[in-house]
Length: 178
Image (cartoon, rainbow, N blue to C red):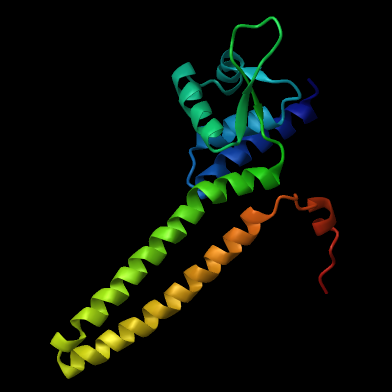
């Protein structure tokens, strides 16, 4: 393969490995996804091990995670008994899968915790001294602000996840902001 192709492949795969950490995934998971994404053909576990120079156990474990997140899927290759994998190349679908699985759940948890905190403060109000009541009202104001933020986040996630049509990223990149 030409050195430019190799360099671009290596830097992209490495970059996706680093980027994966930003989203709470492992470096290996990001590099596996990048390797699959840049491969025109499905790859076997052995090919992934050889390409990335990592153990079969690590590849197998991380591939299960990629499948669970909807970032890769097992595909059948005629005449082969081995497992082969292909990356989900629709970035909109990858984002929807990740947001739907993880972020939406975290927003739900945050809203639940905030709601419980409000209930506890309101239930304890009659037991508090005047100074503590002022602090409790301050807490309630701040918690209400947090609650409003997470409710907005929940609506935004629902809007993103509820859209069945993919965003035309090419059109978005052509938008000029003045």
